Each structure stands twice: as C-alpha cells, then as structure tokens.
Image (cartoon, rainbow, N blue to C red; front, side, top):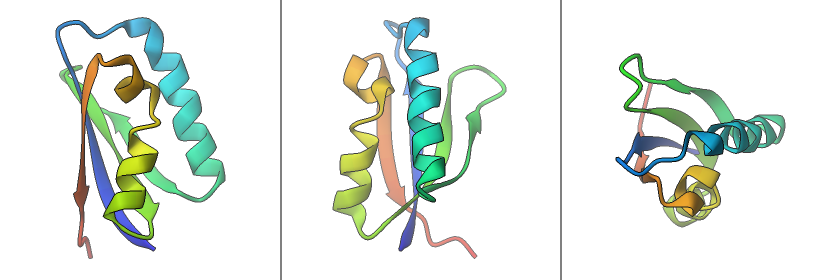
Length: 84
C-alpha cells in the first residue's frame, strides 16, 4: 500500500455539524488500518490525514466518501506522499 496525504480545508460555507461524522469516518478507516495519523490544524482552517491505499484512484475514492467532501463544505485534496 502507498501513502496519501489528504488535505481537508474548510470553505466559508462549512457546516460544523459534519465534524462528528468526519471523525467517525476516520475512526472506521483507522480500524481498517487505512489511516495512520490525522488531526486538525491549529488555526482551525482544516486538517489532514495520512491514508493508505493501493493507488491514487483508490485514495481519491476513499477521500471522496469523507463526509467533509460529501457535504461540500470542505475542499478535499489527495496527494501521493513519498514520506520516509
């Protein structure tokens, strides 16, 4: 599996009520061994998580199921990350 950095940035119309669903989504991925690290940014502009997937297409498909993406209130971007 490869590593992907998923950036989740709040848009002006974000709904804070989506945050608990997003956290449950990350907990499910963590249980599956897909998420290694996650957390918000200190300035409350968004957050990121480190996702394990076979390829970019799978990583994007997973990230696009995130309630933050589904709600339309966050910009979700996936980067292949070649971390050491």
